[in-house]
Image (tube, rainbow, N blue to C red; front, side, top):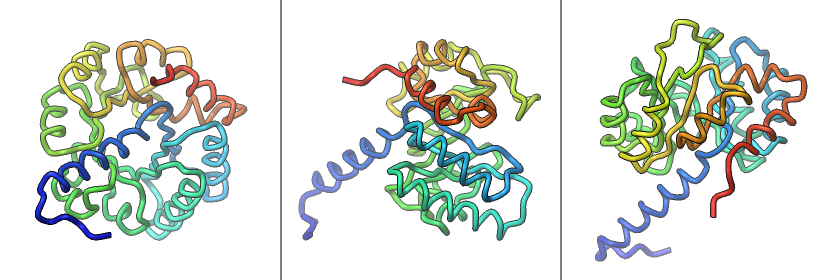
Length: 230
């Protein structure tokens, strides 16, 4: 299809439409894979979450060999694509590029947003951890991220020493920014409603999802916490 290079508004409108489409998937349950799972188990639990209408999955494996990370991420990405879901890679933009994942989630010590955007291109999702600091959210939004994440809001078994964030951060962020706001840290079916009521667009969950006896039913229950958008 020919592109109207003489009309700058055409490029702007295309970017706006792409951002709107990209950010539309950032809503509801954000399933984060547990550390230590073997490949077969990882595939099975992610498929169970996807069967529960999960549309956003983050691959997070910290302590395994690189070749296993690549193989696992590649397989999970294929599964997510087949189910019309998006796979985000934790911390590793190069891996996201290698397997053509939907995007990357960056922490304080990871690659900068500008470099990640240059590597991945304009249509991939880039999210950033902002912990309990609004200043980090301001910088991330100015750099062009697709979502910002705050937490931990509750004690977390995964990161027991994580800084604590207050609900007021979500409320203030929703007033100030147009990008989706994700809550993370110790989130369960019991405490998620207060985050959603404060304005969280998505809740990132590991233990309360993947330790559930019925992962699919648990995913459905999380999704039902989010009101339908008109």
